Structures are given as structure tokens and as C-alpha cells.
Image (cartoon, rainbow, N blue to C red; front, side, top):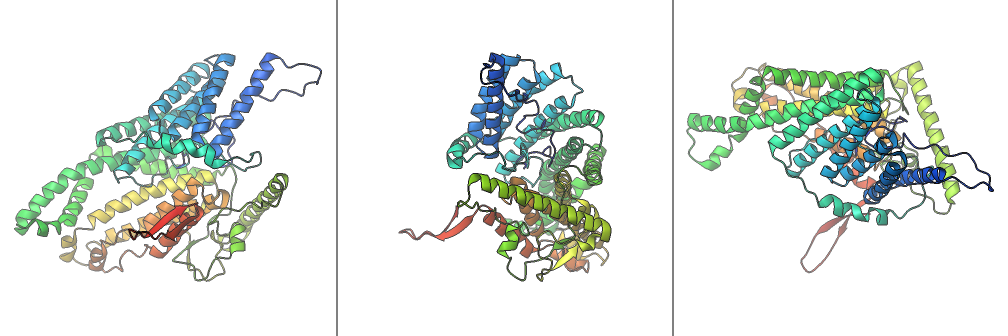
Length: 567
């Protein structure tokens, strides 16, 4: 997501990140006497405010085509009124870039972002936080292109780098009723018209550019905002994620040639003549290639991997020690398996399960719905404050679980490590990014454990350290994912891209491959006991419920089967 950027910090009022930029909005003019006509400048500035509000509203409703058209008008008006070299004009360029990015118009997005960067550089200086935000936006654009290209080829991971890009905290207090379907009509056509296919080399170059942007952005923010500011934390986490992605891409590129070489060696040593029989040795070849790729990497690659982990862990530690924005009670227990009893619908609507969005009561007036929504949020904030106070006074055992299942027979285990301190959206994003890093490392450990022949002849303590390390890595990643999901589900609606991204990533981790069972058996271990397929299936079900996806039987002459529809 995200969706999408790491720069989307919950409760943070500095909107100078890759999102709808209104930080430089023109202040509302004072009340004028009915007999005094407005000046031309006042009318123009009121028009600018109106256009900014429209861009924000379209963005919140995911009507990106409509938002882009309005952002273009806003850019024309700010350029003519303030001139090309003005912060408000740079802000307008940023909005044009964001909408183009969300629509898949990457060349246009890059051009707009670069223009925003140029104007901020000339007006504010290249050591200003606004310039750093523009650098971060360019970095997220490049990372987003890499992730999209990998997803098209089935290589993508669950990197959260772009999972919350441009997302603005939406409380709905000032939103008018709109026809969402009409507003969104132009999105699918625009987004699908620009499929992006890239070579591995092109993706590597884009990722290196992203690293440079994030590194410079982090340096400026560290100096201007300090190490504890959410934007500084975001830049550091972004930098760590991009560095880790570069190492993973390099290893994938190197492993291809090594697999072929290992297959040739196995063919000679096993004296295999049949191609079908040779297929059974592919996992072993991959495992050997993965081991050689890891051990044979350059010192620069190993240093970069270590630096990535240092940045990711440092960002998370800073975020949990310096919480900013809306906070919730920390996660205390990690749910295990499926619930033993059905979820209470009333408790879900109160925020316990958070599996379905609240339904609007159309019998109430718009004013009454807004009033009730404000009261609900006030009660939610008070409940969160009470939970945090209870934890501080009585310890973490006094708090409830994230899913509201404390007293309903659900199996659970105590949360471990830093995951038990994640309480804000900023910390949740940092936790998710570290979890992605750990999942990538776990995937690599799995590959090295697929060499069954090395375990069959080894003593019991042969692969045991690797199995133990794999278990610990998956366990830590799971707790971080659960903590991120807990915070996001408590603050954001269940259909929000960040919530869905956390659920999807966690499900993928818990439903990992079981190809290392024989390795675990050879090590005297009970397989990888951190996998949880039941929990993974529950999370996938929640994603479908959040989007109201229903499977219907569709009978026809062709005997077609079930079809999934989303309402």
C-alpha cells in the first residue's frame, strides 16, 4: 500500500508527503459585509480553496480521474495567481503527480513530481522539509513501479512501501454524499491502459534510484525535523525496505545461473538420463544454489543487507518510543487458529472484530449521522485511552486482544518483543516493513533447507540451528504483522488498503510452503510449528467480507460454476 506510502502517518497534520497536498492552503478570508464586494484576489483564493476541497473529496472516494481533472484546474489557477515559483504551485504539482501515479500514468507522475521538487528547491531550498517530501514522493513512485512489475510476473512480495501512498485520514465529518460509482468510472480504464513490463535490470535501476531519493530525504528530515518525527521515521523505514529489496533482487538474479550449474552437477553425479526423473532434483538444485548465493555474495551486498535491517529496526524502535498521532492499546495476545465460537455481530460493529464496515442508517438525517459518528469516535478514543492507562498501571496482561475474542475460547499466545509496543499508525507501518524483511529472510532459509540429501546424511544437530532460526524469524514476523494489523484495524475501516495489505501479508506468511518437513524431521523438530493455516484462512475470509464478495451459483448451458461477485 499504502495504498500508498510509508509517509502516511496516522494523526499527523503535516500533509507534505505523497498525498493530497493542502498544507499550503490559502487561509479563509474574514467575513465580509454584505454591502462590500469581494476583491478579485479574494474570489480567486476562494476558488483555490474550493478546488483543493474537491481534490481532497475525490481522492477520499478513490475517484482519481475526477481528482486529476480538478488538480489540473487547481494547478492552472495557482500558477496564474501566484506564479510558477510559489509553494502553493509546487503543492498543486504534487497533487497532479499523485493522481497520475494512482491512475498508472507513471511518466506524467514523474514529470509532475520533478516539477514539484524543482519549485520547492528554488523557493524553500534543498535542505527544507518540503524538498525532502518531494524526494520521498519520487522514491515511492520508483518503488511502486518496481512492485507492480514484479507482481505482473508473479515475483512480487508483500512490501508495504507503497501500501498507504497518498492516504489521508478520513473521518467523514465534512464529506458530502456522492455517487461513488459515477466518480470511479474513469479509474479502471485509465489504470489498465498502462501495463508496465520491465526487465530485471530496469527494475534494479529504478530501485537504486529510489534508494538515492530515500537516503537524501532521510538526511534532510533528520536534520530539519529530528530523528523522532514521523516523517523521519518513515524515510528511514522506506530506505531500509528499498535496500533490502535491492539485495533480494540481486540474489534472485544470481541464483538463476547457479541453479543451472547445480542441475548439471546433479545430473552427472546421479547419472540421470531421463528428463522427468531430473525434475525431482530441482528443489535440491535450488537449495544448493540459494546456499551458494548467500555465502558467495559480496561484502557490499552483506553490508547493505545488515544496513537495511538496522534502518528497519531503528525506525520501529524510534516509532514505538515516540508515539505520535492517534494511539490504541497495544496488542497483548496473538490469536491462534480459528475462533471456537461465532463472532458477535454487535461486538463487531463496536470495533471488536472490525471485519465489516459500519452500515449507514438511512432513516437518520445527514446531520444526525455525522453527530453519531463523532460520538462513536469520541467513545473509541476514550476506550483507547483507558486501555493504555490500564496497561501502564497494571501491565500488558490487563488489556484485551485485538480481535475482541478474549473470553470466547479463542486460542492465543502472548505477543513478544517490540510488537507489544506498537500503538500508532506510524509504528504499524514500520512494523509491517520489518515483517516483510523478516519474511524475505525466512523464504531464503526455506530454500536452503530444501536440500533433503544433506539432511538425510547429517547428524541430528545438522540442520537444527537453521530450523530454529527459521522458526524464530517467522515467529517475529508474525507478531509484527499481527501488531500492525491490530493498530490499523482499530483506527482504519476494514476495507482500507492498509488493513487489507496487513491481512493478506500475514495470511501469506502463515500459509507458507511445507517443503521442509523432511528437513525438520531430520533435525528432530516437529516441522515449522509457527505456521497457522486456519488463521490464514480466517484472514482471507475477512478480506472477502470487507469487500462484500459473495460466491453465487450461476447455471447456464455451458455448465459454468461459481462466480465471485463484489458488491
